[in-house]
Length: 193
Image (cartoon, rainbow, N blue to C red; front, side, top):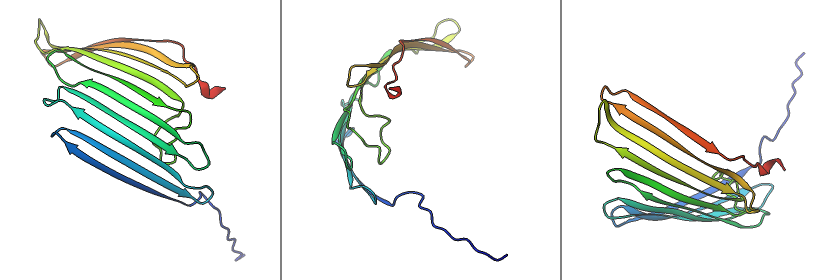
């Protein structure tokens, strides 16, 4: 019939995001850096986030310490902070591994730019690998991994606790065989409260 229907619909609020990153290498294999972000939205005031990160390695790259310390100031919310640390043994004849720790206080919020899954989180993990490169019988080399993890919220409620072993062997005919076992304690979901 020739009638035309026009309408306007707002899909999302208008926003502007800024990201700045600086990084300096030193000692040939280590670095320190900083990241700063800001975001402005129509309906809310500005949100800010900043973090300092580092990677420190020994001269032969056998060991490493990495980390990040961040702070956030979301629009209309309390500021927060978080920390991530990792210590690694990167090489060796038989043993490699790492252990790490993460802390996000209740108000830590990078999520305007999509950086973290959740605030209110404390946890850590460890991984040790024993490997052999010298074969025996039909086996040319092996890997055995031992993992553990734990995390809780800032109220002390355990969110997860567990560990596993997994192993693999490469046979001389280039086939692989492997398996593993995992054990985890019951989980508590504090988002269901």
